[in-house]
Amino acid sequence: MIRDWLIQKVLPRSLWVYHTNCGACNGCDIEVLDVLTPYYDAERFGIKVVGSPRHADALLVSGPMTRQTAPAVRRVYEAVPDPKVVFAIGSCATGGGMWHDTYNVLGGADQVLPVDFYVPGCPPRPEAILHGIATALGLTPKEVHALHAIQEADEVEIEELAEEQRLVHERE
Amino acid sequence: MTIASKLKEALLCMKAGRVTLPYPFEPHDPEEGFRGLPKVDVNKCIGCGGCANVCPARLIRVIDKDQSTRVLVFLYERCTFCGRCAEVCPEGAIEMTRDFELSTDDVHDDMIGEYHIFMGPCERCGRCYRPPTALDKLMKPGMREDTIDRKCPMLCPGRTEEKE
Image (spheres, one colour):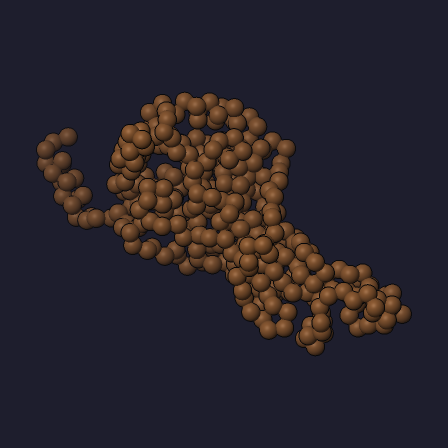
């Protein structure tokens, strides 16, 4: 109870972030760097990139989870003190990207870590990363939702699909 | 460094003014030619599956749900926004929108697009295909077993040689 209250009180003030690259092409890392410049200025939300996971509140994961980095990233995650937030930046970290089924990639970051927030994009715009942070801090609402559309046989009408009509999709 | 140069530096910094974008509180539209989330106009889509063929991340699935419905499933979470699907679409049904605020806490429920497209069933092999004319499309969908042996115009292009 007190712990939850403390989390609510402390985390929105300043989120210290540790950035891990687990196999990214550096595109997302450049955009993360861009967010920290005065033009986008993530530091006005208290975001600060720190050099050690033990100082961090949040873990920023970019890139697909490769077989080589997965145990190391797991150790980094365990080194971050509780309570912790994990952000997956970029298409590779959210779902594996183009490499979702290659032999040396396990998939997205959620295959190894419990990811709290996903920021898709290849690479995501700095605005998109800022929006993700702001959504996590509760400053802006979530914009994206699932798209379901159906074409009717004779009269073409776009309808919302009922819940039972939707297919169940399993990710590989 | 003298104090004068420090003062000059401070003046230069003050001249630049405020450069930080007020972004999360005010909208900031992307620049021209930005490719965001691809969306399918189901009224234009003919279900050819060309987008699924060229997608480098292989996120588009073409599923024939039944004999007259083809479902395009976009697993948007691994989309790289390359725009190849919109490029190859013969009907121009896929549009790269300018949506970039895609951050979510539940990627498996939010980053999905499911588009149900009406197709005519081939009366011989039973698979989905696009009827050639609008008149054929108006015919009642669904496989009818009593018409399988009959000569019927609703045959898919792959089976036309069996017609004779």
